Amino acid sequence: MRHISNLVRDSVQDLLFAFLHSHPKGELDLICSAMWLIWHRLNQILFSAPNSRATPNWNQIFEWLTEYHDQGKVFQGRAAPSATSPPKWQPTSTNLPKLNVDASVLSGCTYVTVGGVLRDHQGIVYGAFDQKIQGNLSPVAAEAEAEAEAVAVREGLLFSQRSGWKIDIIESDASTVIEAINKCQLTSPIGPLISEIHHLKTTSPGIIFTFTPRLGNSVAHSLAKQAMERNVCGLWTNAIPLFIAPYVILDVG
Image 1: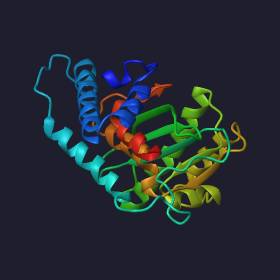
Image 2 (image 1 turned 90 degrees about the vertical axis):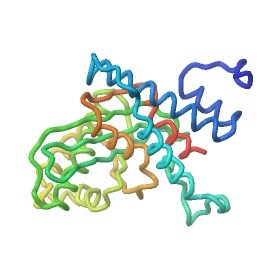
Image 3 (image 1 turned 90 degrees about the horizontal axis):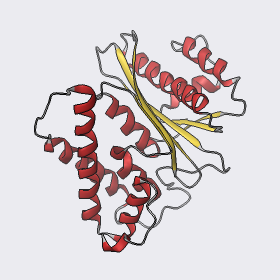
Image 4 (image 1 turned 135 degrees about the vertical axis):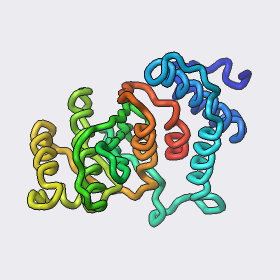
C-alpha cells in the first residue's frame, strides 16, 4: 500500500488502475479476486440468501481467474497491435461515449440475460447494467440467440435514455443482428424487436449500430454472463462493478 499512499483515490476504479501500474501482476489478480468475492458474497447475503453464512465458493474464484488469464494470453509474445490487429476494445473517434451490449441465453430457459457498459474515448466506465428479462424465445437455437442479442440492443438504448447520456455508438458482437437492425429487416424473425429499436432510436438521433468481435466486447459479455447468477438486476452509474474490473483493465492496458 505504500506505493499509492499519496494518490487521490476517488473511486475503486482509480485504485485498481493505481495497482495496475505499481504492483506485480500476480498481486493485482489476488486483489481483484478478493474484492470480487467480497462483493459477490455481500450481494448473496443482501438479496439472495439473507440468512446464509456459507463458506465462499473459491472454485468460482479460480474459474474467474482462469478466464481472465486466458483473455490475457491473446497478445502474449506479440508486438504492439498494428492496424490489422486492433485492440480488444476500440475507442470512438469523438468524445461521446460508446455503449457495448451483449446477451446470454441457455437452451430451455424462459428468460435472457443482458449486459451493457458505457465508456468514453479513453475507456473510462461511465455506467453499466445487467438484467434478467423473462420472455418466450424461439425453439430454434439460432433464432433464440438472435432474439436475445436484439433484446440487449433494445435494453442498451433504454439504459442510455433513462440515464440521460448522449451516445453515438451501440456495439454488439452479434453481426447478423447488427446487419438486420441497420437494414431494418422487419420481416425477419426478430422483426418486432427491430421495430422497437428503430422507434426508440427516433428519440436518440445520430446513434449508429456497429459490430465488434467478441474480444472487443468482453466487458459486456462478462456482465451478461454474471446476470445468469444474480437474482437482481444491476445498475451502476459513475462506478465500475468489481467483477468486470480485470476485463476493463485488459482493454485499456
